[in-house]
Length: 361
Ligand SMILES: [Zn+2]
Image 1 (tube, rainbow, N blue to C red):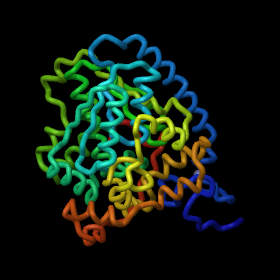
Image 2: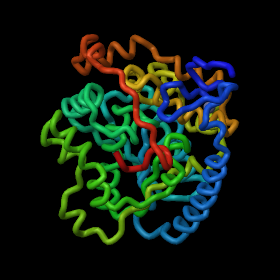
Image 3: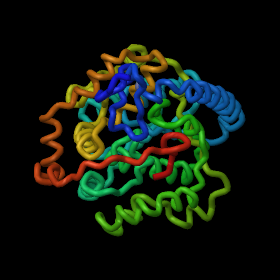
Image 4: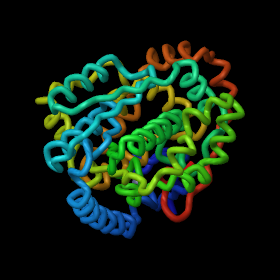
């Protein structure tokens, strides 16, 4: 039998450091060989599609807005916003969390696209002192559990959790029945295509992470990452969160072609894995140093297995991580190379029973 000392699956792009990975004699990983997972994902998508269509037709048109769209200005959320308006006929309120690191090009895209689609837009910008301390704490400490961090970097997870909780608050305050996000399958597990969050269960599942974050950042964490009790007490029904893009089999090139007529242009100051955020390169680097692989490997590998991306294209994205962006973010966060050197490489625990849960930590 041949000995393998390979770094990466020869079929997808998962690294040898990916938790739970095993290669066969041909160098193909167990995730690529798991046909059962592919079939069960397809069944979950078919069920979600049916449920999304029936829920939308039942609950549409009852209030001022049908859906609150978490809109980052990236290509995927732009396409999702377009789907919501054109394909599903929803009246959408677009919501952007400006984390202070959005590319200037992304902000221009947001303005052009919401104007082009004729939707209302709300931008929320948390204090940059607070947000930077969250990103720094997430980079230098173990804030979130391993299970959450197989498909996303800890900095992105901290930001997206803030987006989610802010969206929940706005949807509850305004009585909006649906929250839309632009995730693709691979970024989220199949059970995350459509779900309803019960806030109290969510906060129970997040308790350890929030305790960790509070210990490093301070009590302000509760004001940003929580929903006030009086609002929760008044809830009769939580909004559904839906990821409409998971129902489409579409390549990145097709997405970009579809959104260009709205005035969307790829920003020049982001890395190969992002189309809106300058923090991404930094978050990717921290993940690579700590865990030995890129947080985009799972998503890109999923696209390769579905035939929606070539392996070479995926590798190109993973390696396109401009050093100048990384350095500029480091100085904005008040971090030095010593901080990076102090990070201990470690191996994540393999997750049994599916990879990561939505809304959990
Ligand atoms: Zn593989």
